[in-house]
Length: 422
Image 1 (cartoon, rainbow, N blue to C red):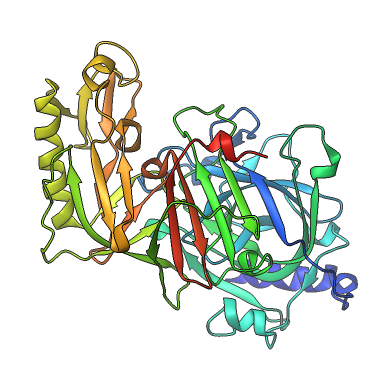
Image 2 (cartoon, rainbow, N blue to C red):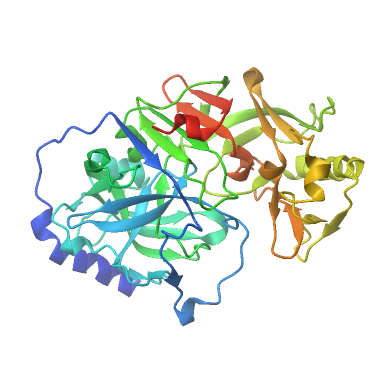
């Protein structure tokens, strides 16, 4: 607690010259962002301080994620933040943060005291009230967010402020594609603990309460083409008026938390109309969450789904095994022979059916991942909550997903993301 107090007092002392009011700068109507695979060579390598090496293991952020590469401040400092539709805040680690376990090699951590475009937000500011439910204040009267919880105990806390963000270009070397956005609300993290993936240094929140979304209006879309290939170059996020709205629609229930809830009506496995407990007692609430890679089904649904997947694969001549974490696995690699031949004629293994007739069809790559042990395993898990099914990145591959927050509709379209690339 003493170190947190020191952090806030230090910022208040060093940032006095950067908290004056600024003229309003119109924000762009839209922004196109090329998403970066978490294992891509461009992502800096990190080391973990020895004192922080023994953290509880977690599977929530296991598997690939998609990063948004941008620069913050002036002079600009490069960031890699997770695109997360389940979070309502954009935040990055700041210099002096307590218990940060990620440190970049050969790369500076953002220091707000060195930025001429940093502006603090006071506790009585409406933006502070919106983000920090209790309107919490630092000892110097600056707004801060406290214990913004993520999966399984992960958290971040720090000051709320505004900064200049620089994005692009999406085509290398084209300066005209660089977009500078002033006055973006963000969290300057003074404490980020137990975040399982050491490759990122922040979260790019896209929930309905995020000021990132409101800065560009009320629309956004993303296309997830392939997360099995770290060099795939067409994963795309579009913020604002240019968002792609095509395909089938299903209503969005936007909660006070900002999360986007969908109504999952039923699930089928295989090409038959074998419905999994369509009138059962399991919760039908679901969210599309880009902050995790797996599919997390409420327990009753998960149990039946796993049983039917085993039967479906047995019909193809594939017998299951389990790994040390009791995941359902199969011998071989689903992209090579002989397994590839057994799956060649299978386009859809399972489908998630939402209200209004929108379907999310799941291919082999949407459900399974290849391991380095000569097996491929099902990336479907029992949900960490009994109230909601969480649909991660893997299940969203080959889909463009559009969010119309005014119309409260989600658009789903199976398509090749390269066709959307400008």
